[in-house]
Image (cartoon, rainbow, N blue to C red):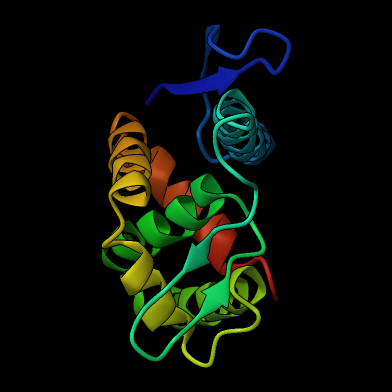
Length: 157
């Protein structure tokens, strides 16, 4: 099995590493997570002049401001879509806890962050961002996404 480790100094340079169940695998997963954050920050900064950092999601009864960029909100939404099917039952419980906690942190003023995210998904600009994050996540092998999901599930343990 071959894993790809990404260099933060050259974000799109891939080097092959072996031994997927060793400390280097954990390090590889950590580098993947850091690269994911770096790419999202790069995408966010590229549009910083065109879009505000905070997004107001509006609906009939739920007005809440995101405390993060639309890319970060889209990432948490995509993880919520892909991770449950990749995890075992205990990991799914841990993931649900981490997901709900992170979602509450991202949308702190909402009575129902899940509904706020659903309403935000109906906005064309956010929907385009969500599509891009879905495509970007899908470009990685399943085992790398699964490792990311497992790390996320253990974030609040």
